[in-house]
Length: 369
Ligand SMILES: Nc1ncnc2c1ncn2[C@@H]1O[C@H](COP(=O)(O)OP(=O)(O)O)[C@@H](O)[C@H]1O
Ligand SMILES: [Mg+2]
Image 1 (cartoon, rainbow, N blue to C red):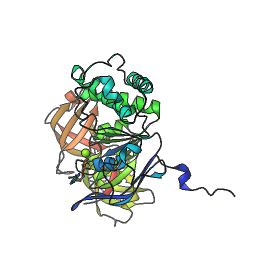
Image 2: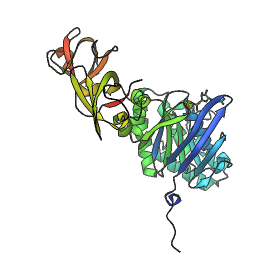
Image 3: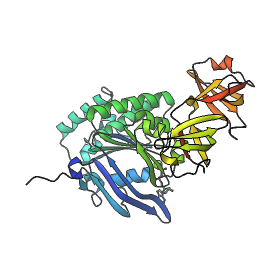
């Protein structure tokens, strides 16, 4: 008999199926469903308190769900203890054992799993090579830099050959340059091992730069799940538009709506946007238009379809300049306008009256809130 193809044949590495978790009257997770594919680097992104750590703890088995099911490689794990789940973990406070050497810290998980000594030593050597700490075996944690300690923590998570790697804001305590190099290194190791990884962060740029897919969370729910480009370019709601990346929110009016595009009127300008989220609106209804800082162009003040404003702040960023522009006719808030290179510093000085136009394509619009 021929097998009927089912979704199970393409089983997710980790599946959350309508998972709910409450703490007294707080609903930390509200019927969350999420499939993490084998070998995927998936990031949970959201503000503090949205339920990211709770979701990781449920995957790890530190907490049990109030409703719903969690499975790993097709096997339900709701009732399975942590040590049988094949989970490697690295949390925010990745405290190493201070009285143990690097090698002993890394070997710890193998010892508790009663792996024989020769195999233990070989695994520790392999994994220390992977995180570039060969030769540091006998050092104590206090003799290591922050980045090296971080790598020991990562080695400790990897040494058990986990099925899934869970990382909860592992780099949030590092300074920017160290964080960037650890991110790159983690991603290289993760790719090399093909290791399914769930990474938690509240930092949108970290999420965008690292991930295969990002799950944007708020208040115990996933608001959008997609590639970094998807969540940046095509946010599904105002929360995602505001939380992921810098954005400007302008009030416009719906001029016309077609099958795929709608036209928004903003002062004397007309902007074409995808119509998907505006289909139910009446003509001339108010809409919130989201424009990324890099989608604005600064032009001369008398350009007909531009908004008129004046420069109130200039923030030099090296590779680009951020201008804050007051445009009372278009927005109560200052517009954030990003100009590549550094020409803007002299071209659009403080106090200058300028025109601001919007490049076609790439804006998102929603019914006004
Ligand atoms: N052990 C707990 N007891 C009570 N409330 C908790 C507990 N853990 C988490 N919460 C609450 O659940 C919500 C989600 O928390 P958490 O998953 O830690 O968020 P995040 O990691 O996104 O910052 C928050 O409102 C938090 O206060
Ligand atoms: Mg957390």
